[in-house]
Image 1 (tube, rainbow, N blue to C red):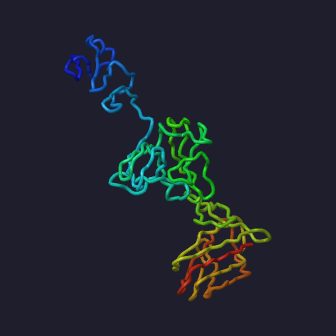
Image 2 (image 1 turned 135 degrees about the vertical axis):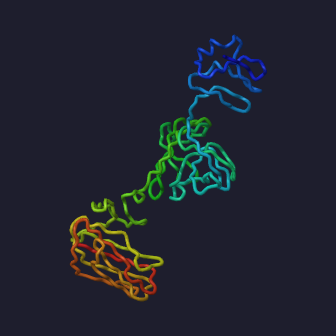
Image 3 (image 1 turned 90 degrees about the horizontal axis):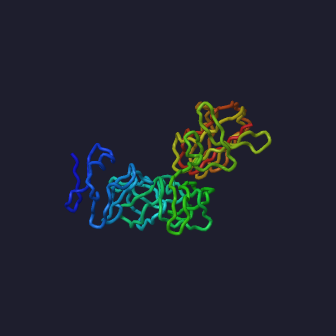
Length: 339
């Protein structure tokens, strides 16, 4: 049995579960089928397949496509100031069940590695905010000199929350923000798709120090399936010159980043330098985890060991470990020369 009504008290509009629009039309009266809000009317025979009726503004309703152009996440503005629509944010910490949002910047790892998207709206500090993680963000000022529709956009290294169409270089982090869809002074559109583009030392099969030395290269060890940093020789008969550095609060057992032998070589020289040294410090050179040589230092000077003739083979892993820690010592460097 069909029935119909409007919200003003006259039954006109047909609702029938399980019937097609054609069947409902056949059952419906000839009076207009409408649905009222105080300032809005929508014809329920309107719309297209898949659309839904939803509030479209204050006291207004209408037909809308039943899909979203963007993935939006709720967060909390904890910056201490406004976050402006279109600024880039990263998450750090939480406020209740919501992540805290801060302005991202490509000049540091901490402000870039958890970049999530663009602010959907302008919101003051201490308030909830919506963040577009993926999809279209409209209503922006994208009329920027040098920008062209289709440009890849990047997180800016110079300005917190900023966007640039120039890929950051050097020590800055290249965080892709999205694509410029429309260039316009107030109706600009960006397709958001954040890609953090990890650096080499963030890859799971790479093991290199946080501050590698100039001239170092990546060498592969098939036994561990890992790439390591190594310094090739600068010429002559030397194949490798490798330094192990220890600094800070040093204790026995501390070790340096391994050196992987890429072709057979002989460990010829070891030089040990220390500063602020008192007491006897012993450093063990290990090959594949087994002792190869021990070097000691007890003064703030350079101690050299030469003509060692210690053989190594391809894929051997050479490490340096503090075997005995003296009374004091702030910085040590151990240099190996292999021929």
